[in-house]
Image (tube, rainbow, N blue to C red; front, side, top):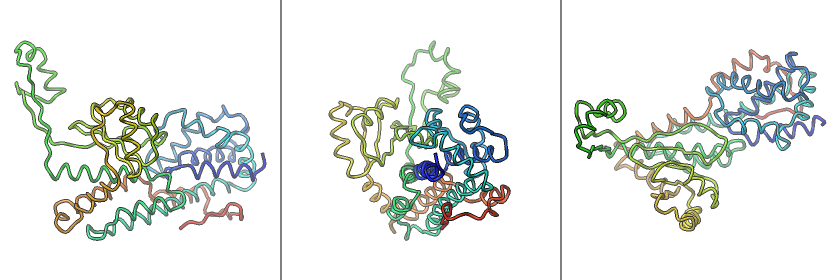
Length: 355
């Protein structure tokens, strides 16, 4: 494979990737090991298939503060024919070694471009007040900016989590537990269970606890995983993509919860309702929340009447979740300088525009 075709393969991986850049990092580190002589034969996939995950994770912990938690199968498809197969990596490796790490520098400059775009959005959000914050604009920026659209689902998750948790705290929602079984022998034998697992102490049979929402994980391998759970019952699934009957079935069958809330685009609501009816899953679907619902509830929280009680907290939660979810450029400059990438003069085919 020639270098032009290999670059197209690499760009497919970069353009399909999300902002955490796990797969491009993995390719860059394979090329690095080859350039310094640690890897000799890039056509031998088994010599780096598994080891390259460790190399990638070492870099990702520096640059994005976390490592991939996707399934091994998903991680491994980086070497598939429709991604960057060994023959493409061979061509990239030969060029990269002959040009002092230019492709490595290209990959990390592409990461810098994505991080720059995110940084600009975050700066805009941080400078917002309850009076000026515009959720529609934030979503539109992710949908329109090159390289960020693949991460829009995380923006939806942040949007939902910040809103739902703000409202739950504001209304001081509580969860009440009650032991209805009064058999003294059972209560005596399982007293330690009630204390350690349930939280009932010294013979208590009732307990009130604050309601909480919990946002789960950061896996990117599939868009059918559970996004949030609540200690007051429902499991919450946030979807921004079109759902078919199989996807709806997977959501309901794959989540071990009696009640499910689906958050989706407005255009998807009717099709989801129809599919849920066809699949006879009405009893498990507690409700469907659309993006229009989210915008309306955000407007209420940020309105003059409620911004002191809700708006300020909502914006703080949104900024916190956004900052924790998306990488910054904090460790990038030092990393680039330690590798010497800043000294590499990029040729025309490998130039990257960084905002």
